[in-house]
Length: 367
Image 1 (cartoon, rainbow, N blue to C red):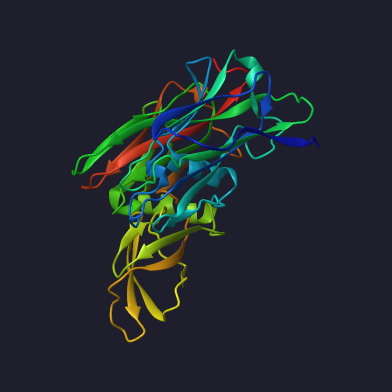
Image 2 (tube, helix red, strand yellow; image 1 turned 180 degrees about the vertical axis):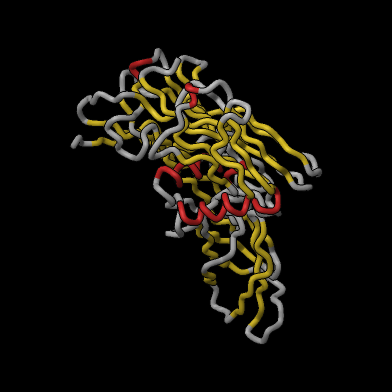
Protein backbone atom coordinates (compact mmCIF):
# COMPACT_ATOMS: atom_id res chain seq x y z
CA UNK A 1 0.00 0.00 0.00
CA UNK A 2 1.38 3.43 -0.89
CA UNK A 3 1.84 6.21 1.62
CA UNK A 4 -0.23 9.29 0.75
CA UNK A 5 1.11 12.79 1.48
CA UNK A 6 -1.00 15.98 1.80
CA UNK A 7 0.59 19.22 0.54
CA UNK A 8 -0.79 22.76 0.58
CA UNK A 9 -1.34 24.63 -2.66
CA UNK A 10 -2.86 27.53 -0.69
CA UNK A 11 -3.08 27.82 3.09
CA UNK A 12 -5.76 29.86 4.88
CA UNK A 13 -5.43 32.71 2.38
CA UNK A 14 -7.90 35.61 2.45
CA UNK A 15 -8.49 37.43 -0.82
CA UNK A 16 -8.73 41.23 -0.97
CA UNK A 17 -10.73 41.10 -4.19
CA UNK A 18 -14.49 40.52 -4.04
CA UNK A 19 -14.93 39.63 -7.73
CA UNK A 20 -12.27 37.59 -9.49
CA UNK A 21 -11.16 34.15 -10.62
CA UNK A 22 -8.64 32.25 -8.55
CA UNK A 23 -5.97 30.75 -10.80
CA UNK A 24 -3.89 28.07 -9.08
CA UNK A 25 -1.31 26.11 -11.06
CA UNK A 26 -1.06 22.46 -10.08
CA UNK A 27 2.50 21.15 -9.63
CA UNK A 28 4.27 19.81 -12.70
CA UNK A 29 5.00 16.08 -13.08
CA UNK A 30 2.88 15.19 -10.07
CA UNK A 31 0.35 12.45 -9.41
CA UNK A 32 -2.74 13.66 -7.54
CA UNK A 33 -5.42 11.42 -6.06
CA UNK A 34 -7.72 14.32 -5.14
CA UNK A 35 -7.81 17.95 -4.09
CA UNK A 36 -9.17 18.88 -0.66
CA UNK A 37 -10.71 22.37 -0.78
CA UNK A 38 -11.98 24.55 2.04
CA UNK A 39 -13.65 27.83 1.08
CA UNK A 40 -15.35 30.15 3.56
CA UNK A 41 -17.03 33.57 3.56
CA UNK A 42 -18.41 35.65 6.43
CA UNK A 43 -22.07 36.62 6.25
CA UNK A 44 -23.19 40.23 6.40
CA UNK A 45 -25.20 41.52 9.36
CA UNK A 46 -28.56 40.59 7.81
CA UNK A 47 -29.90 37.01 8.16
CA UNK A 48 -29.22 34.73 5.18
CA UNK A 49 -32.21 32.87 3.80
CA UNK A 50 -32.31 31.48 0.26
CA UNK A 51 -28.89 32.76 -0.88
CA UNK A 52 -25.94 30.62 0.24
CA UNK A 53 -22.18 30.30 -0.16
CA UNK A 54 -22.78 28.16 -3.25
CA UNK A 55 -24.24 31.19 -5.01
CA UNK A 56 -20.93 33.01 -4.58
CA UNK A 57 -18.96 30.50 -6.68
CA UNK A 58 -19.77 30.26 -10.39
CA UNK A 59 -18.04 26.92 -10.98
CA UNK A 60 -14.89 24.93 -10.30
CA UNK A 61 -12.68 24.11 -13.27
CA UNK A 62 -9.46 22.23 -13.86
CA UNK A 63 -8.01 22.86 -17.30
CA UNK A 64 -5.00 21.19 -18.92
CA UNK A 65 -2.91 22.89 -21.62
CA UNK A 66 -5.30 25.85 -21.55
CA UNK A 67 -8.16 24.08 -23.36
CA UNK A 68 -8.66 20.49 -22.11
CA UNK A 69 -11.40 20.09 -19.50
CA UNK A 70 -10.44 17.73 -16.69
CA UNK A 71 -13.08 18.98 -14.25
CA UNK A 72 -15.89 21.52 -14.74
CA UNK A 73 -18.83 21.61 -12.32
CA UNK A 74 -20.94 24.14 -10.48
CA UNK A 75 -20.51 23.85 -6.69
CA UNK A 76 -23.81 22.04 -6.10
CA UNK A 77 -22.89 19.28 -8.55
CA UNK A 78 -19.31 19.21 -7.26
CA UNK A 79 -20.75 18.55 -3.82
CA UNK A 80 -22.96 15.81 -5.24
CA UNK A 81 -20.01 14.14 -6.99
CA UNK A 82 -18.28 13.98 -3.62
CA UNK A 83 -21.48 12.40 -2.23
CA UNK A 84 -21.32 9.76 -4.98
CA UNK A 85 -17.56 9.21 -4.59
CA UNK A 86 -18.08 8.57 -0.87
CA UNK A 87 -21.00 6.23 -1.65
CA UNK A 88 -23.75 8.39 -0.19
CA UNK A 89 -21.98 10.33 2.57
CA UNK A 90 -22.82 14.04 2.63
CA UNK A 91 -19.85 16.49 2.62
CA UNK A 92 -19.12 18.38 5.83
CA UNK A 93 -20.25 21.82 4.67
CA UNK A 94 -20.90 24.52 7.26
CA UNK A 95 -24.25 25.98 6.18
CA UNK A 96 -24.56 28.66 8.86
CA UNK A 97 -26.91 31.45 7.79
CA UNK A 98 -27.04 33.47 11.00
CA UNK A 99 -25.85 37.12 10.80
CA UNK A 100 -22.05 37.60 10.73
CA UNK A 101 -21.41 33.84 10.87
CA UNK A 102 -18.91 32.18 8.55
CA UNK A 103 -20.16 29.73 5.93
CA UNK A 104 -17.85 26.95 4.79
CA UNK A 105 -17.58 24.58 1.82
CA UNK A 106 -15.44 21.49 2.39
CA UNK A 107 -15.11 19.89 -1.05
CA UNK A 108 -13.22 16.92 -2.42
CA UNK A 109 -12.25 17.08 -6.12
CA UNK A 110 -11.59 13.42 -7.00
CA UNK A 111 -9.50 12.10 -9.89
CA UNK A 112 -10.02 8.45 -8.98
CA UNK A 113 -12.92 6.09 -8.55
CA UNK A 114 -12.58 6.61 -4.82
CA UNK A 115 -10.16 8.42 -2.53
CA UNK A 116 -6.60 7.06 -2.67
CA UNK A 117 -7.27 5.05 -5.84
CA UNK A 118 -3.92 3.57 -6.97
CA UNK A 119 -5.01 2.97 -10.58
CA UNK A 120 -6.78 6.24 -11.42
CA UNK A 121 -5.39 9.67 -10.55
CA UNK A 122 -4.39 12.88 -12.30
CA UNK A 123 -0.85 12.76 -13.70
CA UNK A 124 0.10 16.35 -14.45
CA UNK A 125 3.29 15.14 -16.17
CA UNK A 126 1.18 14.27 -19.21
CA UNK A 127 0.45 17.96 -19.86
CA UNK A 128 2.40 21.18 -20.24
CA UNK A 129 0.18 22.88 -17.65
CA UNK A 130 -2.77 22.06 -15.38
CA UNK A 131 -4.66 24.87 -13.67
CA UNK A 132 -7.43 25.08 -11.06
CA UNK A 133 -9.85 27.98 -11.65
CA UNK A 134 -12.52 29.20 -9.22
CA UNK A 135 -14.49 32.33 -10.25
CA UNK A 136 -16.41 33.96 -7.40
CA UNK A 137 -18.33 37.17 -6.61
CA UNK A 138 -19.19 38.58 -3.18
CA UNK A 139 -22.27 40.79 -2.68
CA UNK A 140 -22.19 43.35 0.15
CA UNK A 141 -25.91 42.81 0.77
CA UNK A 142 -25.27 39.24 1.88
CA UNK A 143 -21.50 38.90 2.39
CA UNK A 144 -18.88 40.72 4.43
CA UNK A 145 -16.50 42.00 1.76
CA UNK A 146 -12.86 40.87 1.65
CA UNK A 147 -13.59 37.68 3.64
CA UNK A 148 -13.24 35.06 0.87
CA UNK A 149 -10.77 32.58 2.39
CA UNK A 150 -9.40 29.33 1.00
CA UNK A 151 -7.12 26.41 1.72
CA UNK A 152 -6.34 23.87 -1.01
CA UNK A 153 -4.49 20.62 -0.34
CA UNK A 154 -3.41 18.02 -2.87
CA UNK A 155 -2.96 14.37 -1.87
CA UNK A 156 -0.16 12.56 -3.70
CA UNK A 157 1.62 9.20 -3.31
CA UNK A 158 5.02 9.32 -1.61
CA UNK A 159 6.49 7.21 -4.41
CA UNK A 160 5.38 7.43 -8.03
CA UNK A 161 2.76 4.88 -9.09
CA UNK A 162 1.67 3.68 -12.55
CA UNK A 163 -1.91 4.96 -12.99
CA UNK A 164 -3.82 3.91 -16.10
CA UNK A 165 -5.85 7.12 -16.30
CA UNK A 166 -8.19 9.40 -14.34
CA UNK A 167 -11.88 10.04 -13.76
CA UNK A 168 -13.16 13.12 -15.54
CA UNK A 169 -16.11 15.08 -14.09
CA UNK A 170 -17.87 17.69 -16.19
CA UNK A 171 -21.14 19.32 -17.12
CA UNK A 172 -22.64 18.23 -20.44
CA UNK A 173 -25.53 20.64 -20.97
CA UNK A 174 -27.48 23.24 -18.99
CA UNK A 175 -30.91 24.40 -20.11
CA UNK A 176 -33.77 26.37 -18.55
CA UNK A 177 -37.25 25.15 -19.41
CA UNK A 178 -40.38 27.17 -20.04
CA UNK A 179 -43.55 26.73 -17.98
CA UNK A 180 -45.03 24.21 -20.41
CA UNK A 181 -45.30 20.46 -20.75
CA UNK A 182 -42.54 19.42 -23.16
CA UNK A 183 -39.75 16.96 -23.94
CA UNK A 184 -36.15 18.20 -23.85
CA UNK A 185 -33.18 16.24 -25.25
CA UNK A 186 -29.60 16.51 -23.99
CA UNK A 187 -26.96 14.91 -26.20
CA UNK A 188 -24.28 12.87 -24.44
CA UNK A 189 -20.52 12.56 -25.13
CA UNK A 190 -19.45 9.31 -26.78
CA UNK A 191 -15.63 9.32 -26.64
CA UNK A 192 -15.01 7.85 -23.18
CA UNK A 193 -16.83 5.23 -21.07
CA UNK A 194 -19.49 6.64 -18.75
CA UNK A 195 -18.87 5.84 -15.12
CA UNK A 196 -21.78 7.89 -13.83
CA UNK A 197 -24.45 10.02 -15.48
CA UNK A 198 -26.73 12.38 -13.58
CA UNK A 199 -29.00 15.41 -13.72
CA UNK A 200 -29.54 18.33 -11.38
CA UNK A 201 -33.09 19.71 -11.47
CA UNK A 202 -32.58 23.29 -10.31
CA UNK A 203 -35.87 24.67 -8.97
CA UNK A 204 -35.80 25.80 -5.36
CA UNK A 205 -39.55 25.62 -4.74
CA UNK A 206 -40.55 22.33 -6.42
CA UNK A 207 -39.50 18.72 -5.84
CA UNK A 208 -37.84 16.63 -8.56
CA UNK A 209 -41.00 14.56 -8.97
CA UNK A 210 -42.97 17.74 -9.69
CA UNK A 211 -40.61 19.19 -12.30
CA UNK A 212 -40.05 15.98 -14.33
CA UNK A 213 -42.50 13.19 -15.13
CA UNK A 214 -40.39 10.69 -17.12
CA UNK A 215 -36.80 10.21 -18.31
CA UNK A 216 -35.53 8.04 -21.15
CA UNK A 217 -31.93 7.17 -22.00
CA UNK A 218 -31.88 6.67 -25.78
CA UNK A 219 -28.81 5.22 -27.55
CA UNK A 220 -28.45 5.02 -31.33
CA UNK A 221 -31.97 6.28 -32.01
CA UNK A 222 -33.76 3.64 -29.98
CA UNK A 223 -31.65 0.61 -30.91
CA UNK A 224 -30.69 0.50 -27.24
CA UNK A 225 -32.80 1.97 -24.45
CA UNK A 226 -31.08 1.37 -21.08
CA UNK A 227 -34.18 2.74 -19.34
CA UNK A 228 -37.45 4.56 -19.96
CA UNK A 229 -38.97 5.22 -16.54
CA UNK A 230 -41.28 7.46 -14.59
CA UNK A 231 -39.51 9.86 -12.29
CA UNK A 232 -40.92 8.02 -9.25
CA UNK A 233 -39.07 4.80 -10.05
CA UNK A 234 -35.79 6.62 -10.73
CA UNK A 235 -36.04 8.54 -7.47
CA UNK A 236 -37.17 5.47 -5.51
CA UNK A 237 -34.12 3.49 -6.61
CA UNK A 238 -31.83 6.31 -5.49
CA UNK A 239 -33.19 5.60 -2.01
CA UNK A 240 -31.90 2.05 -2.39
CA UNK A 241 -28.62 3.13 -3.99
CA UNK A 242 -27.88 5.74 -1.32
CA UNK A 243 -29.55 4.72 1.96
CA UNK A 244 -29.70 7.55 4.46
CA UNK A 245 -26.47 7.71 6.48
CA UNK A 246 -25.92 11.35 7.36
CA UNK A 247 -27.03 14.75 6.04
CA UNK A 248 -26.57 18.51 6.14
CA UNK A 249 -26.88 20.71 9.22
CA UNK A 250 -28.62 23.97 8.33
CA UNK A 251 -28.16 26.73 10.91
CA UNK A 252 -30.31 29.83 10.46
CA UNK A 253 -31.76 32.83 12.27
CA UNK A 254 -35.36 31.74 11.80
CA UNK A 255 -38.63 33.41 12.56
CA UNK A 256 -42.04 31.82 12.21
CA UNK A 257 -42.65 30.54 8.65
CA UNK A 258 -39.20 31.68 7.40
CA UNK A 259 -38.04 29.64 4.39
CA UNK A 260 -34.34 28.82 4.02
CA UNK A 261 -32.27 26.77 1.58
CA UNK A 262 -32.13 23.10 2.58
CA UNK A 263 -29.71 21.88 -0.11
CA UNK A 264 -31.50 18.60 -0.81
CA UNK A 265 -34.67 17.48 -2.55
CA UNK A 266 -37.68 17.69 -0.23
CA UNK A 267 -35.61 18.77 2.82
CA UNK A 268 -37.84 17.35 5.54
CA UNK A 269 -36.04 17.99 8.88
CA UNK A 270 -34.89 14.84 10.67
CA UNK A 271 -33.98 16.84 13.78
CA UNK A 272 -34.48 20.40 15.02
CA UNK A 273 -32.34 21.99 17.76
CA UNK A 274 -32.48 25.52 19.17
CA UNK A 275 -29.37 27.11 20.65
CA UNK A 276 -31.37 29.75 22.51
CA UNK A 277 -32.45 29.78 26.15
CA UNK A 278 -36.19 30.27 25.63
CA UNK A 279 -38.57 27.34 25.65
CA UNK A 280 -39.91 27.11 22.09
CA UNK A 281 -42.15 24.77 20.10
CA UNK A 282 -41.28 23.80 16.51
CA UNK A 283 -43.49 22.40 13.76
CA UNK A 284 -42.76 21.85 10.09
CA UNK A 285 -44.26 24.71 8.10
CA UNK A 286 -43.16 23.69 4.60
CA UNK A 287 -40.58 21.46 2.91
CA UNK A 288 -40.51 21.62 -0.86
CA UNK A 289 -37.85 21.77 -3.57
CA UNK A 290 -34.71 22.88 -1.75
CA UNK A 291 -36.57 25.08 0.75
CA UNK A 292 -37.60 24.36 4.31
CA UNK A 293 -39.41 26.44 6.93
CA UNK A 294 -40.69 26.01 10.46
CA UNK A 295 -43.53 27.26 12.56
CA UNK A 296 -41.81 28.66 15.65
CA UNK A 297 -44.01 29.14 18.71
CA UNK A 298 -43.54 30.35 22.24
CA UNK A 299 -44.16 27.74 24.93
CA UNK A 300 -47.66 29.24 25.21
CA UNK A 301 -48.40 28.26 21.58
CA UNK A 302 -48.24 31.81 20.18
CA UNK A 303 -46.04 32.41 17.09
CA UNK A 304 -42.76 34.18 17.88
CA UNK A 305 -42.29 37.71 16.59
CA UNK A 306 -38.47 37.61 16.47
CA UNK A 307 -35.74 35.30 15.09
CA UNK A 308 -33.91 32.42 16.76
CA UNK A 309 -30.76 30.44 15.99
CA UNK A 310 -32.13 27.06 14.98
CA UNK A 311 -30.24 24.03 13.63
CA UNK A 312 -32.08 21.64 11.28
CA UNK A 313 -30.71 18.31 10.08
CA UNK A 314 -31.84 17.39 6.54
CA UNK A 315 -30.94 14.32 4.48
CA UNK A 316 -32.04 12.12 1.60
CA UNK A 317 -30.71 10.42 -1.56
CA UNK A 318 -30.82 13.54 -3.77
CA UNK A 319 -28.70 16.37 -2.35
CA UNK A 320 -28.97 19.58 -4.40
CA UNK A 321 -31.81 17.92 -6.33
CA UNK A 322 -29.38 15.69 -8.24
CA UNK A 323 -30.62 12.36 -9.59
CA UNK A 324 -28.87 9.26 -10.93
CA UNK A 325 -29.42 8.55 -14.64
CA UNK A 326 -26.81 5.81 -15.09
CA UNK A 327 -24.65 4.22 -12.41
CA UNK A 328 -21.69 2.53 -14.09
CA UNK A 329 -19.36 2.52 -11.12
CA UNK A 330 -19.28 -1.30 -11.20
CA UNK A 331 -19.62 -1.68 -14.99
CA UNK A 332 -19.02 1.47 -17.08
CA UNK A 333 -21.06 2.04 -20.23
CA UNK A 334 -18.90 1.63 -23.39
CA UNK A 335 -20.06 4.84 -25.09
CA UNK A 336 -17.45 4.64 -27.86
CA UNK A 337 -19.10 1.44 -29.15
CA UNK A 338 -22.13 3.47 -30.21
CA UNK A 339 -22.75 6.45 -32.49
CA UNK A 340 -24.90 8.78 -30.41
CA UNK A 341 -26.93 8.97 -27.23
CA UNK A 342 -29.28 11.40 -25.56
CA UNK A 343 -31.33 11.85 -22.42
CA UNK A 344 -34.99 12.64 -23.07
CA UNK A 345 -36.60 14.60 -20.23
CA UNK A 346 -40.39 14.84 -20.10
CA UNK A 347 -41.01 18.12 -18.30
CA UNK A 348 -44.09 19.26 -16.37
CA UNK A 349 -45.41 22.81 -16.64
CA UNK A 350 -42.85 24.38 -14.29
CA UNK A 351 -39.77 26.49 -14.95
CA UNK A 352 -36.60 24.64 -13.94
CA UNK A 353 -32.99 24.41 -15.05
CA UNK A 354 -31.65 21.01 -16.06
CA UNK A 355 -27.94 20.27 -15.62
CA UNK A 356 -26.83 17.00 -17.23
CA UNK A 357 -23.39 15.89 -16.01
CA UNK A 358 -21.12 12.91 -16.47
CA UNK A 359 -18.16 11.03 -15.01
CA UNK A 360 -15.94 9.60 -17.75
CA UNK A 361 -13.07 7.14 -17.57
CA UNK A 362 -10.05 8.56 -19.39
CA UNK A 363 -7.22 6.12 -20.08
CA UNK A 364 -3.81 7.74 -20.43
CA UNK A 365 -3.67 11.33 -21.63
CA UNK A 366 -6.79 13.40 -22.31
CA UNK A 367 -6.90 14.09 -26.04
